[in-house]
Image (cartoon, rainbow, N blue to C red; front, top):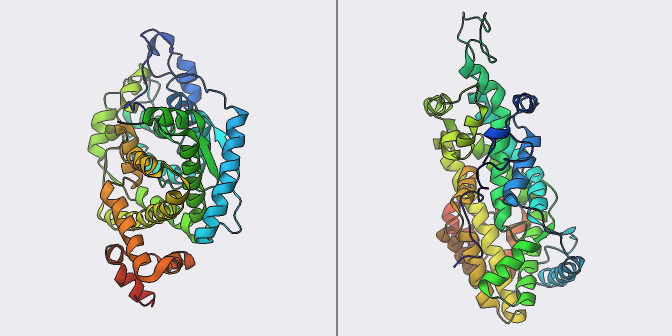
Length: 414
């Protein structure tokens, strides 16, 4: 059972309906296609057309519908629960002693808008890597760039077209990625996303309600659990080096893709410059669009990302269990539902995780949980809290599987 249906792509309107607002692709777009509109969209500075990304993210997040309003009473309730959660998390960890995050109770589109901006540094690094290859297919040396009778993209329509389309295609891709994540996000920290903005608390009210109803969970218990979850993760991100390291590693990972240019040319060669609606199929096939292969350098970075995220998730789960088992009557039921929520993702969401090096399977979460439990058993909560003293206190991949090795390195007696 899942919290709500997780389609690989939004439900499509009946044939003949317009496509994405302001975007000349998508279901029914051919009948309303405007070449002038496309040419305006091709005028973009930087590797990503962020205007298109925002439009696509909002459309995908709402599956073509309208953003439901958030009841002020929901905002007030989450604010009260977050304050209570912060008090308890401070008592367990000390991490939030000087931390007061802004709180948002919002809908999926607002979540998408927030995270499109928060993830912008990582997405731009990814786009710059992909765009460099896409834009390298210009005319060969010695060939004129234009000639009598040439089409709108010159004598080399493939190379010129890719150069013009790169920001648009990458905007489509970035927007769809964030939109799919927004469809099921309950807060900011369902997944360990490499956000670059200030840590904050976020509750996606329509998704929380859908999750509550799908799992038949007590409303008050679930909302307090989610508040605890958000607060402890925001507290972790408030440790000065934590978020910086996650963003740095993820940026390094996405910048190291080695692209299969032959696959790119094979896929993009089917584009008809006179029929830009042919781009729709590419945007809906992200694996073919990227044509990316993992490089040896990525494997090393991936191990570091997985160690960091395993610790973040394992520590948060340990704190949640210590607090939740005391204060939330239905904690066991909710905790299991939340574990299922973060693991049972649609293919589109899993693609985003794979792309960023953040696809965590059950065993990765279990490694983090086992490490934290092992440290607590040997050195208590105080020993575990030494994780946050500095970046050098993070366990290596080997230490993650052997807490005693970590304790020996930081010179704590077992």
